[in-house]
Amino acid sequence: MDLYFIAVIPPEGVRLEIQHLKEEIKERFGAEHALRLPPHITLLQPFKMKTEREMQLLQALEIFATMMTPFHIWLSGFGHFDSRVLFVKVVEKKKLIDLQAALCKNLSAIPEITDDRKFHPHVTLATRDLPEEIFPEAWDFLSRRDYETRFEVTGLSLLKHDGQKWETLMDFKFKKS
Image (tube, rainbow, N blue to C red; front, side):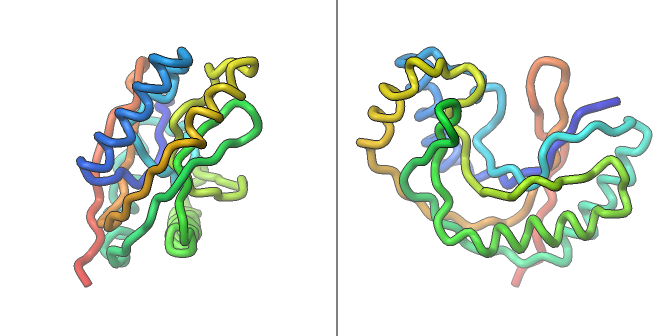
């Protein structure tokens, strides 16, 4: 069984800005787990699937993407989940929430894909290996900073774990409006 997840990957300029923030957090606070993934907004949490069913998933995502229209999102400021996860906030989440709901509905025929968690769009900067005792200092550092950007969501990506890290298996472009 292979491990996959589906995400929105920001354009290169935004990816580089967020990657720099992740690296700065690693250098200051030792949290490096988030560096194993490209900056992204998760649409579907990781799921396991047999490799021989991968083509069905690729075809379903290709069809889904042709039904979608690009839209803009806005990232602004930072947030956290408990004392273990730091992230960039997504402002005006409705279009991402609608996209995620449509994706789940469209892929409902694939039994391996279930996502019953409450969807909270964000871009993770630190997770899992951010020590709880260091969290207040890391949050203070991040919360004093400003970060804001807007970008157009023009598609989604299927990522696959190669045993060490996540790699983009395929990008699916939305139809042009």
